[in-house]
Length: 469
Image (cartoon, rainbow, N blue to C red):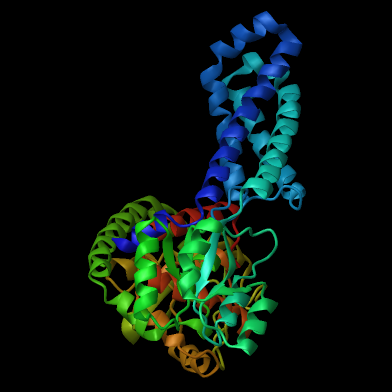
């Protein structure tokens, strides 16, 4: 319970506020564009009547904007959308949304069709102006929860390196300095990261008050002596939030770099009682969703099977032994997308533009329809909808030599989709595999309903955009 409260109060509140504010302005911009066009075309008095009569339909026209903007990542969850550096993606998304609006108007409401092009023109500039306004306001008022780092252990700077995100990813927390007993040479290392030493623990409450501190970030190596514990308790009673430095790193970057993973802590999270309760609920949801999709995709699956048989030699299904929960092997099924002789010789990782993939197989991969047979793996309990992608044992053994702790991803069932898949996608180099593993670790530790829903929604977005390889 404490974990969920901490997340609710975490410093992304302003990011969420500006996201909602941006959505509200986008909807208002659509209505403004049509109202302004009606006023020019029909006159102000008649425009007011026509606008009121068609208000329900005009509200419906905001749907394409919200849908396309979501698919284009213009409503990012943990950062602000920066129009000043991404105006071209904004205009591209608006073009797609406006095409949908044109189709809706000419199909469902031809009465306002004559003014649609003019309305969309004004709507586009209104949305651009709204996005710029939100960007400027976010840059001025958006950042940040002011925080102090409690204690310091040599090596903590590796966390600071991971917290230095790309400029457009505005993090909703700012560590202004360090409180604690720090050696002189360590103090110089901290100053290089913009973290001055502000004093010892006795100054904690005074600095919280004078610097308007809302969050205390605690170093993993803090000593926890009696004086500091009392001060932290007083700060907590005053409503100051507390979070460990490694947890902050995971929350901000949405991943756990394998260099920083605490194996004992990860295991404790996997053994938590609430996790077992969620695993049972997740199994029920998996079964319900699988049965629904089996009924929905039965006919497409039959047509795909016929097409594979007609267009290329070889079996319809492709199966392979993969490693699942707790290292147990199972046979995973997919529609065959490669030539029948593709697996001759040494096993290879899938890569972009793989020459072994057939023309129809490339379509299946783009749309992820090749994954349909894995519904069977979910039904029998070998896989889940959401989880790290299952790998072959030979790959796991090789990668464990290059990526320590790689087997930690086996602490949960593998999935058809996962956090690493929706955030990063395919990985065909050692560096990209390390990055992908970091996202897998984040999911293993933080597996819960909200994260699963986010992953499924992101997967739907990738399916609609056909981003598979």
